[in-house]
Image 1 (spheres, rainbow, N blue to C red):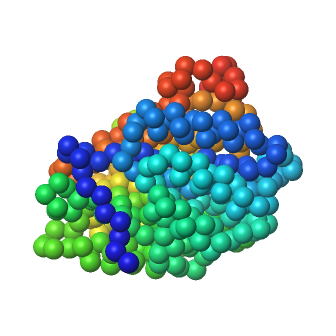
Image 2: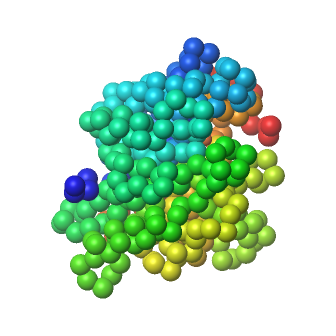
Amino acid sequence: MDSPTFTLKDGKFKILQLTDIHIGGCIFTRKEDKAALDGIKKVVDAVCPDLIAVTGDAVYPMVFYPKPFMSGTFNNLKSSKIFGSFMERLGIPWAMVFGNHDTEIWSRYNRDDLSAYYESLPNCLFRKGECFNNDRGNYDIRVLNENGELNTVLMFLDSNSYLGKTFFSGFDVISDEQINWYKDKINSYKTGDDTPRSLAFFHIPPKEFRDAWEKCYRGDKSVTYHLGFIQEKDNYVGYPKTKHGNFFEEMVDFGSCKGMFFGHDHLNTASLTYKGIRMTYGMSMDFLAYKGIKKRHGQRGGTLITLLEDGSFDLELFPLEDLDGTSYFSTKVDKPI
Ligand SMILES: [Fe+2]
């Protein structure tokens, strides 16, 4: 099947990154779910994107945290349907990848089940695509210039969930098979000597983001800070603690990937360039998954990526609190938890 293709309009293509929406989907989370979906609507109305890219954790079937039995439901298809039907009503093409929370070991539905649902939605470009182990949703979307030349390939990757079965085993990595798939896909679009440019969308940040942030913090000139903050406690970056998989370094060597966009750590919004790749935490939308998250607002919103005709891109943050001037749950904010 051919990859979906878009074309720049007036020299631009606007991609709105949304991440970590965390729809609970149960009777106890109706208020939080509504706040998250209303938030998306406000950001979308402000940005008017050509495409929406969701980088994982659309739903939150955690059930036990932060409040036992009040955080979500075992029925992660039901919460996915709440999210998916809302996204469809926006009438804008949208793509997504799974995060670690979309399916949990205790969830009633697995990644295959959710894939079948998302693939059935007319505006949703998600495809199960190439599957590797537990990963679902490795696929690409092409964006062309108005003259028909390839501008950028958008690569969507499932960064999987856990090394074991649950959160406590640590996070998984993008596998070697996925890296090879990425390179083969990009090479298949090659028409001359130049390697086509690409942007990668996935959920769990690479370890190298942490390395880059530490260097940036120390004033190391090899890292360029662009915008955003690291607000997780102790500068936490939830990267995989395993030596397997080497996605970032492989992408540096390969030379195609110019940007990586991820979520996972809801309070981080920083964007840094390191070794030629701009790594960006999308603004999250979560009202549910962290203790006290409802009272924090600086991290909540959307991240606009504007592709330009020369293949470069601009980035802009759209904090929800700047869009409506009011907050859903509190106006006292932004003290670290
Ligand atoms: Fe999340």
